[in-house]
Image (tube, rainbow, N blue to C red; front, side, top):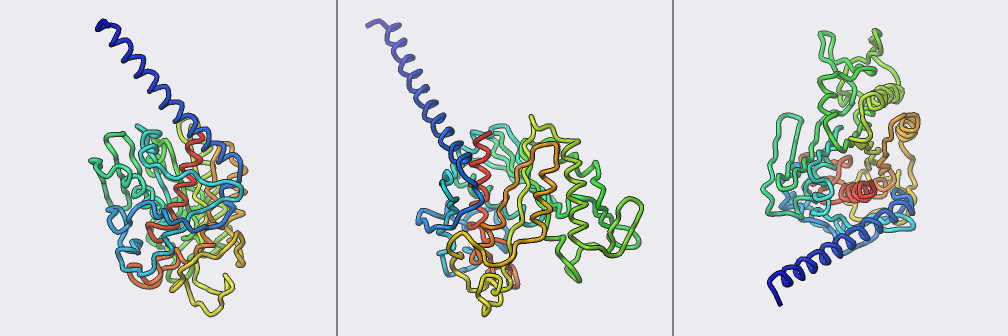
Length: 360
């Protein structure tokens, strides 16, 4: 057999192997697309799965001290062993290396409050766990974090911006401008392939927890107004910015939905519980006995009116069912029933995000 024949046969075998690999990948993507299209990813229940968590939070370098429940000595581990199971289908298991390949050369940005940071920390741990030898770079400055995997050219960014609209510091105090988004801030959002926005919890604050002194709409400055009305105006301002500034062929926009807090046991039919402290298991089933949040219809009606497509990560119910998923006393001071342990509940948000993105 001649050298040329051998080379030809080797090339033929390589081509066949490549084709089989491509077919396998295409089949995997097709199956994941069927999963996304066949059910509502946000209706379901939490089921025990011993193969979870997806990574060891105690050694992930990107988790804030107050959210690293494993490292902070939380003794129970059951909260790590649940995965979200939508009605009628199952989520594809997160594949960090496939994620990096899929978004090679792309920039993914979370913009919002500490719940956006919660999701960013989860995603960065999930991805880094898949490529532990990666020579990643992490840039931190004030309220900006950027993690880059240079081998793939993928950047995962978090920008702290709890209101999305402008908060100005003046002589009279801090003024929340409900109808203004400055060019200097918003221009940082534009050069991005995937944008995940979030804003809600800061709008519910009152008294000493409130981080502004006045509202402003147009030229009118007022001391107080209904906070959900203010939220509605601000979200409309953000929606107008997206409609006028985003090119949907370049950038896919998501809105991280409202996440639950668990400070009153009566909300989940456990009136003797003062908070999430000591909770070790989710609420079984698919129904939460307590009330939904007033911001939910505002978010949904805002997105429905938009000209540009925005996908809602409607995670309110799946977080309401997880009274056990908060740092509680294993936080950075006090009892925290607003944020989420990492590893933990936010990993499901990213598995849902991954399932949706694969379909694009």
